[in-house]
Structures are given as structure tokens and as C-alpha cells.
Length: 183
Image 1 (cartoon, rainbow, N blue to C red):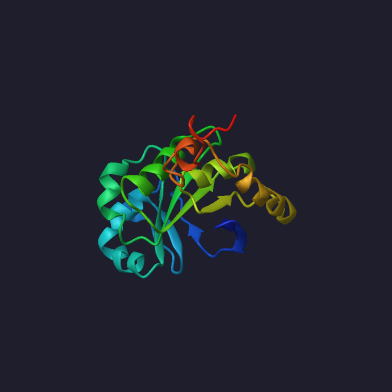
Image 2: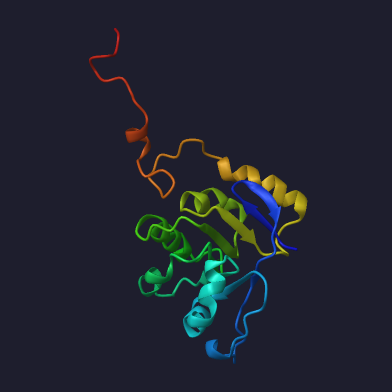
């Protein structure tokens, strides 16, 4: 069973990620029983059949960096889990998708980063709105994953605004004004 960092803790996870073969069409895809994360195009092809399962929390959707988030926005509500795929660690589109889901589209369910998710990115991923991080199963040993959890809180007070801190630091921290400074 894969390990996931969820809300700063390592937990076992039973969600299966469905990926289409190169020659497989979304309409021909078979969604397995149990917890399944399906690509957006599979959700769109099987929406009527999967809506009840999504509402019960059995099916989630995963988004690719080039998926049309605005077209998906009307479907966000029934999902208890949405994942965003990072095919390469250099592909930063997932950060924008997460931020938009949290801020513009008001998504409050579990937001999971999947794919090529590296420990150096954990802090930034959580600041973008991800509350679950699922690195590839072959990426880290259990010990390395435990050590990586500490990276999530590397910076206790980030300066910039983000999905988790909508105000920049200078707006969050009260500092003495010129009249309050003692000589």
C-alpha cells in the first residue's frame, strides 16, 4: 500500500491512480472498484456513471497541467479528493492549479500532489494548497519519507502570500510604528 503525507503525517493509502495506456481512449477505460483517482478525460467520458461514486467519496479525479481547469470548475463540488499530477519536478503548473482550486473555485476537500513530487518541494506544495503529498512509490524509503516530513515546516513564517497565508508577512505581523519606538 502506498504511503502518503497527509496533513503533515505519513499514512498508508488505498487510492489507486488510473492511467490510460497510449492506445486507450477515455470512453473505453474501466474504472476499478474501490477508491480510484481517474484522469479528467475519463471523468468527463463517464461522468453520469461515476457521479454517485464521487459523491460517496469512492472516486476522485486527477488533473494534468494542461487540463482545462475552468471547464472542470463546475464539477469540483462532489469530489472529496482531487489530485494534481506532476509529470516532472520541473513542471510547475500544478502549483497554479492547486492555488486556483483553493482560492478561485473554493475547493475544500483533499488536494493531493501526485507524480514526481520531491521533498524539496513539500513546503511550497503545502503553501499552494495541497494537504496530501504522494511521491512515486520508488522515490523514497520509509526512513527518507519520515525525514522529508520535516521539510514541510522549514519556514515558520513565509513572507509571501499564498493559498494557506492569504496575507503577506508584513500584513500578518504587527510592528511598532515610528511613534511607538522608544529612544
